[in-house]
Length: 92
Image 1: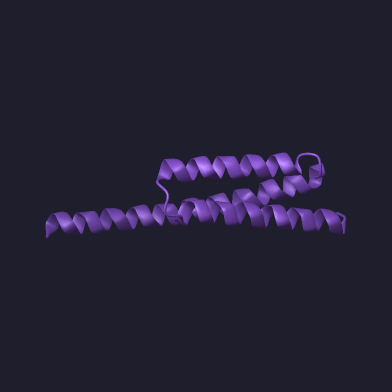
Image 2: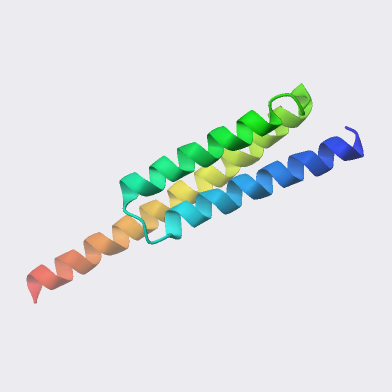
């Protein structure tokens, strides 16, 4: 893969990860955060649509999938902890 494709891929992954984390940890309600996330993802894909090669898009997709899996894992841990805290409050 060309260096310019690697740089573009790295920028795309960084923007996607930053946008995702910002939306998830921001102060917006869940529905608003999801709207922002969809909007940012669409803007990113629109801007990269004609600039990326198939190889770089596949790489971005794989990296985003890795991030999605990690985020789901962390969300599951958070939900488990919230359940534990709710059970403790009920028992108190």
